[in-house]
Length: 128
Image (cartoon, rainbow, N blue to C red; front, top):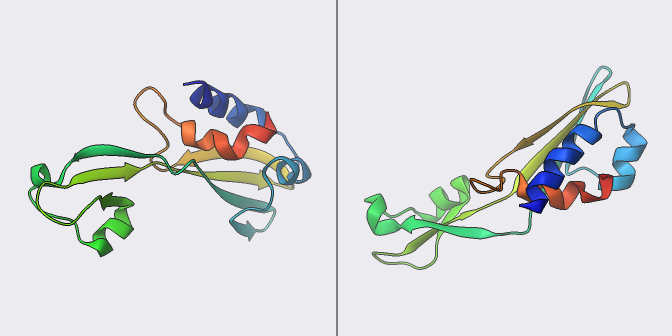
């Protein structure tokens, strides 16, 4: 739960930071987009935690490997009654105008019911 609180706090703290400060605390972005004076730096964050969500028998159909790759959900084994796991991660989009952070967005399966955004803390912890 502490990581979730940290991720929420740093999200607000990063607003107003400079491009250089973001680079110093988060490093090189995984992706970068520029349109005029607006830049979006994207980072992927997480600890590769996977959580059992349900058995595939209760899904009514097995997921193929291709389907699993698309949804980031995978089966632990092949056959009826397998366990299905959801991998948690966070995509962090840092949106800057004229080199100053205006917005920080978190997306993806970032945590559980009480730990929303916990996976975002791994990449943002040095910005606190």
